[in-house]
Length: 228
Image (cartoon, rainbow, N blue to C red):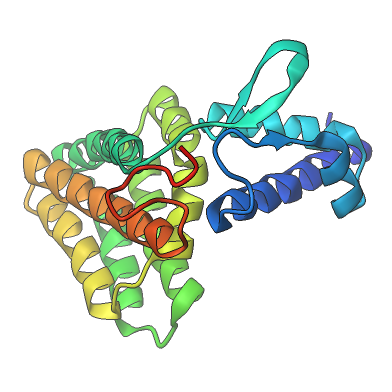
């Protein structure tokens, strides 16, 4: 049973994760910078424990590297590595989409089409619009993933999914069309096209993230890390 203290600590570590993601995404923490546990704890008013827990999660995401004596540094990343990471995420999500297309479960298809209609008809903007699109992807993942694949998708998503939300500049029509291509392929029972459409959508999201990091000066125009 999870204790109340452990639950609070988990919530606190999530706050630290988001704080560090924002610092790295804004360029306040750059490649090679040391991540000072005490400074972060003081800035957020938390103990070192949730900060260290957050560093473990960010190391799994490839943002942090822990060296000798548990000293943590910001890991190197650039446009090339980000494209590779988004490609892997798209391939994993594409496997899930292909499985849904192959199964063609009427209940799953009805759910996805209902979610697509809700997205297309919604007056939501910004984060709320992205929430609706994300719900379609999550429904696809739940329906088309084995437990292992679902765990891999959650693990691979982490920082990438967060960064997409900070970078997405697509219109409503573009967001709807990207999801429609996947769902139409699923409805047609075309696993290859469903997989391809999901990969294409994920890679396009990766390009948005790269453009935003260039705009912020974290990456150079040629895609290299500005701190290198």
